Image 1: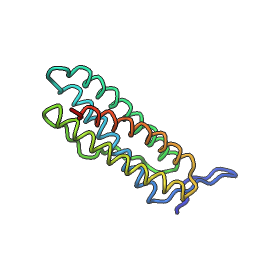
Image 2: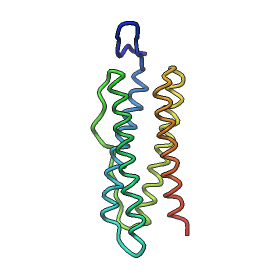
Image 3: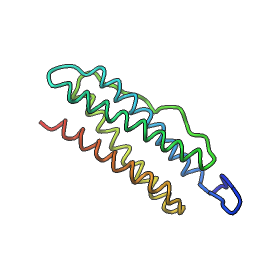
Image 4: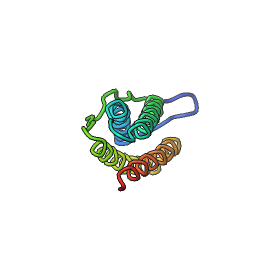
Length: 150
């Protein structure tokens, strides 16, 4: 564990592993915010408007997640990443939503790992931040699973 920030009477510590995981979270949040926004623009066909609206709403939530995580990484004394993970938009509505469902599953797995790591390091603020984000990611996953049901 490395020292990251000190002020009189207070020292904040975070491991490189935790910061790397958090930056991975930022990277994927940036990725899906762009991905979902482009899908919102590119989705066509009958009944596309409610799906497009949902993609836009989720894209905005994901960007807010990226900002919250970046604020925490910065507070801990590290530099937040600005590089998104690989963006995959897809062509047809069903393909887009299947891609998005998988992205949310990956986020859920990552955020559970971050929560465990933050708990082990006694970083309760980071743990609580990711518990809140995890709740949103599970909601997004549910939306995409529901859309894929026939």
